[in-house]
Image (cartoon, rainbow, N blue to C red; front, side, top):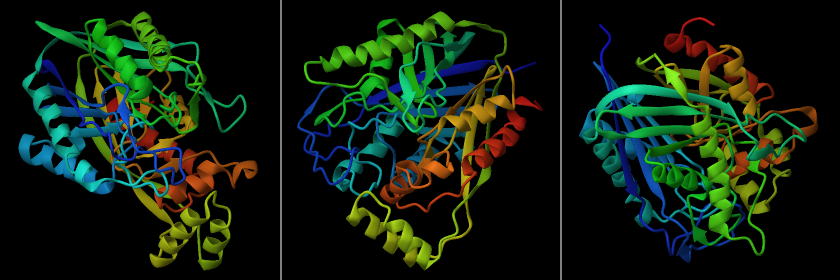
Length: 409
């Protein structure tokens, strides 16, 4: 007999970042937050079925430093008893949130402020676990919509303009909506007002529709919003318009699912890196967008010998027929496309900005070997340059690793 599925939801507000530096848009802007347009939150969905359990977090932050990521995992393990494979930590990647990921030139981290962040994650998780209730029905969504974004790296390039997710109906509790759509949360441009950007609008509108709502950003590394704030725009209306399009697609695409199984998995993948001796590092540093950032990156690369590959942990959870798969990069659309092509007909959301976000994971073509996502972005993150074909390599490895959750294609 299959174990009964339970689900719970937690939400806690992240402290106001007024007076701290906001993250994004580089370089060295000194973009101190002077007000809040809307609150920032950590949201968490707890799931349990028999001996299987999972926590899925989504925080209105640009990303997490390795230190913050490890502190969150440690506290959730110590206080709530969740192992690494049972915890998926994601950030929406809003560029109007505080500097919580160490990105050179894109905002100085405030250590005193950041020290308060792990407790917010733990509180949201505790609330979600306390809220666990029997799941009566699952409704699945996989619906194309009129695009909210466009591929900023390639003219007419790929964009996964599909809203994916689940509505989890529970006994005597509000339903939980898990919604995924890929797009950079940069609608508000370099505002000095903190905001969750469009992911916050999706969640708020979901709440207004009676659902506890969490937004999981997808392969947004090469996707920007079609509409961005310009002079004369009402920022709240602009966010609402974007959020409503995504939420409407979700609601219109819902259909019943008979599958109520819960599984989770984690597995290592190997990311190929560009071979870089001193001469190569010196030459690449000259291609940076900012001299200071490039020199800091150069010194870091020279100070620590680099291997030819990097081990990348991928974490996944299957809720009914829906699979969510996360990796710690600003991930390009092609990664998700490769994974889904390996499993025709399966509803798979590939999610970026997980755990400690390491860098971009871009498509590399001969024409774009010196482009921002290939060269300048790794300099912000202090990460090596990835090798040509890395995106395809990672996509294929993820597809292979998913067999434990979904079986053979």
